[in-house]
Image (cartoon, rainbow, N blue to C red; front, side, top):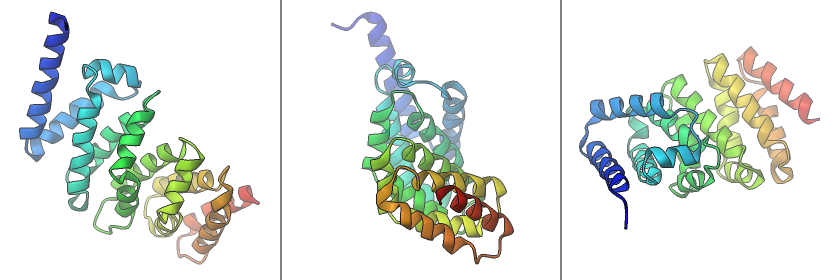
Length: 213
């Protein structure tokens, strides 16, 4: 039997999830603000404690809303940052698996190619892709299998944000390291950036190429 304390924690979780389910955009934005403020940097056990062992129920709602709304930029930055809390959580591999199962990598890459979205949203997308790549070789291969190198190289060449371009350079360098199946693809992707009109992108691509040689 569950204790009174456990029952109360479960009740609070259900109330929270019902609040999310019934909330409109403004209310959800406020919920995301509170979530980010309260949970940034937490480990998987800490998140599960916060959500009475039901953190995945909230992550599922976040990923569903992302899949439905990313094209429209609805609270996109806050939504990506919230998902990032799960993906960056120590011992949170299960969260990563859940995110990938809904096609998370493809969504993140598509965000990079949508011209109407903000640079800061695209940068947040790159950060999440970096978290995926950091999980190991098979995850780097998943990004590359999803035409990730091409998408990232194009974003590096066209982005107006120096910070975002630097993040992309780091990610491409990561994809080219300990990933022999796709090393040449990453190399060629960086080469393709060199004729672009952005001096910053050209410099970053050259730096990454030197490291790979």
